[in-house]
Picture (spheres, rainbow, N blue to C red):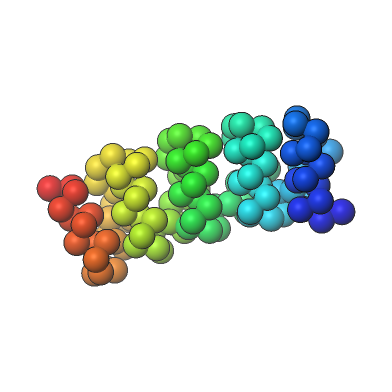
Length: 119
């Protein structure tokens, strides 16, 4: 069974199916969607896949845990767009130092917006 098939089965059942979770957790996309739409909360087994991707780490923090996603911050810090929005939507201020420093190094339009935001 693929992660997509496992996710669809759980989604269509409308409830968590623990025996399918190891399969779902192998894919970042389906891990995030399983957390958001099936569990409607934290999916710890899927976090190792999610934390490797800036986009899905940001959305997991924003939509699922509604707080910092610490293990996803290294991936987020590599993307100026998601770092900027993470500062606005999750941190609501200056990023943690390692993310802040990476953002400054990016030196692009989002860096400029971020600097204006934290003033």
